[in-house]
Image 1: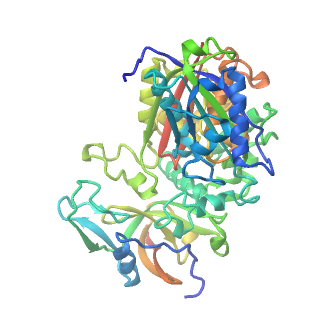
Image 2: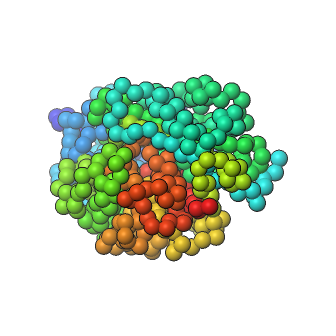
Image 3: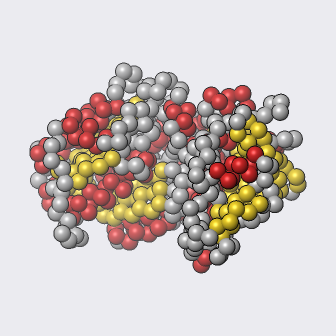
Length: 137
Length: 404
């Protein structure tokens, strides 16, 4: 993909591997607690709401709402220098958790809090990152 | 072992190195210099110090950092000794640990010291990158998206502006006040006065935070010594009493912080990006001190970014939630105003060497209550409030100090 935003690649762990594998398959998955219904992010060893270990990887809708957003002008590290300015956002996904990501695509730099967004999966080298694009207000 | 809560503790001595750009200095050398100055200031015999707390160094880290500093200071046998990992919030926390150690009788005197060469150590201009690449945040779930510390606080600021109508001009008023005070402090790193327009016209780092909304990157260090009030009264410097202290920690990962992950159902919504657990720390500190907000003569408020300070006026209870913007306008927080803030210049204009930044707020609180601040002295200051914050508004300590 041309002009894809770079990354400092994450290193999946025993607990997070299903999340990153899901991204590679173009599926946003998180763990749902079968006892209390809480959806956990980032990947958890036990439900942080009720302590249950009865967690099931579940595919999400991929839609959410912007909880907050900033346009980064000073890159975080040399790896991101070619990408500035870029949008870093906290996305509240429909199923509850709040995750950090980027807003990409048309008018990403005009993103506002409460904008409705949906996940897009971007291959960056060896890793596939879940990023988001705006689909409405 | 039991606490003797009727045993009051005090700061018996403080010391700091020069701050700013100190090329060629090693963080350990800065540690030793700050510690030696505090020992000298207190006039205490080194053999009386049986507690040591450090905050490591981003530049020259060691998992047993407190041991390295012990060796350089010649402090052989300690009954409290550790490297604190509470970052910028470490000093109120360290003060409280020292208080408990002294009140329990397990320590006679505790030395708290912090230094680093974040400006020149990693190479000029590389401090922010060093923090990012060292994993100041989640290397797996935040760093891959190009987030950095100014960006994290920018997310907080955007949310605060969205919820409460806070403006960039109000944020800038904090930077202006800090710089005004730094202009009166010969030791400060940045002393040229600035205006609100200067802040708004400075380079955008991460919206809405401009360069002048962001703290400095510096070299330097500081130290203080805690002992009983009774012992401090026998020493050289005027003791400054710890009237009350509180601390509270939430989460580092921004999604957890914003969502209040793990909060019991009946407390959901109590804490989020713009409502921090500093409320808990403040409640404990004011409760222990038995003073009210009107009693505070001077406040040294942790100011890693302008938004960091702005939200604290709300969470500390100086104004209602959402009114922090209006609170900082009109010179209220400047010398001569109702609540002079960051009289040394703060992290925004005095110095911010990384981990040690918050120690200067505490040292300035002590110097204000000793009435030795010259042009920047708050007249007749009797009670000071000092805050430390780290990990994006998630680690908090609050201390209330009193002149003996």
